[in-house]
Amino acid sequence: MDLQSIYHRYADCTRCPLYKGRNRIVFGEGNPHSPLLFVGEGPGADEDRQGRPFVGKAGQLLNKMLAAAEISREDIFITNIVKCRPPGNRTPTEEEMDTCIALLREQYKVIRPRLIVTLGSAPTRALIDPEARITRVRGQWIERKGVRMMPTFHPAYLLRNPSGKRDAWADFQAIRDAYREVLAESSG
Image 1 (cartoon, helix red, strand yellow):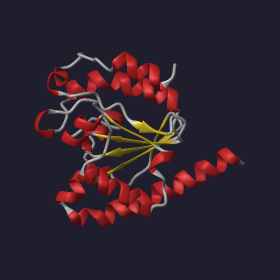
Image 2: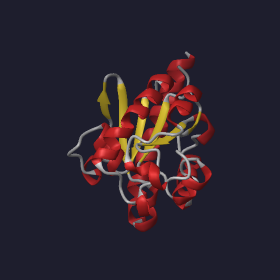
Image 3: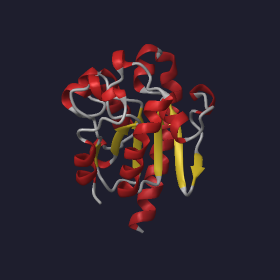
Image 4: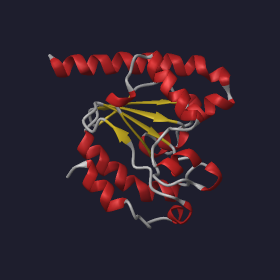
């Protein structure tokens, strides 16, 4: 199985009500063999229109953060916990995330990342702990089945709350260091 096959299987997904308001699913993009996977909450209006993750204002901030951390967006894989835009850009519901996580699991099996960054509370609750509060767990590495996961603030949150940027930058420095370590292990 490869990412293209998975995409085609889910391109017309109707498993949850989110499909009713979408233009297209936002599957994700990047290096299909990257050791680093970023998982956001869900597509916004720009993402729904273009079919690409993180292309709006939050995506522009994410690009700046990646560049500052010397991580090439093209070298990593970026997706969301749900692949269709929630109405009004609201946070995905537990039911929507539970329905869509099957697709993320299939992506995971192909990509086989060693590091996962959850951007915001929804993917953090879905992948790490249903009771997690992003303000309490952000910046901490959590290991599950040999995969290290780092929750951090969603770029959209940082646009609304610029005071969180200092903490997010510390997280991105730790992500950069772990990513470099994994790359060095792979090439050595």
